[in-house]
Image 1: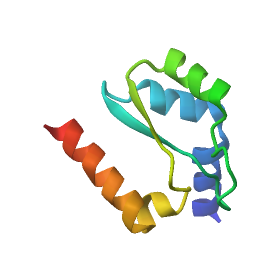
Image 2 (image 1 turned 90 degrees about the horizontal axis):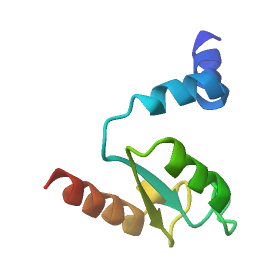
Image 3 (image 1 turned 30 degrees about the vertical axis):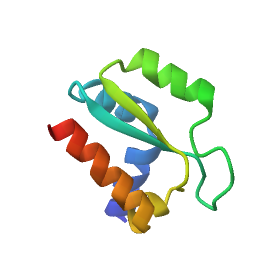
Image 4 (image 1 turned 60 degrees about the vertical axis):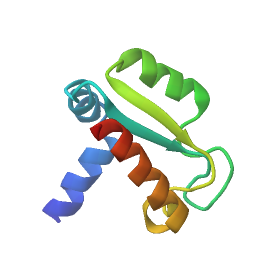
Length: 92
């Protein structure tokens, strides 16, 4: 049960999230995808929330990937290729 509670806190506790993201180093990638969990248009972060994140956490390097969803970002070929390309850009 402890693992479930810890995971829920990591995902839902706004204070814990704010603390963790506030300490992220300059250039930390934040990837927003064009589709949500079930491939619905719009993704998980509405534009106004994304703008708020950009203002509140200026150290984030926010990138938009249009043709993937929450799962295909890493599990699909095009998503994994896009993430690989972004990582290579950041590392250089």
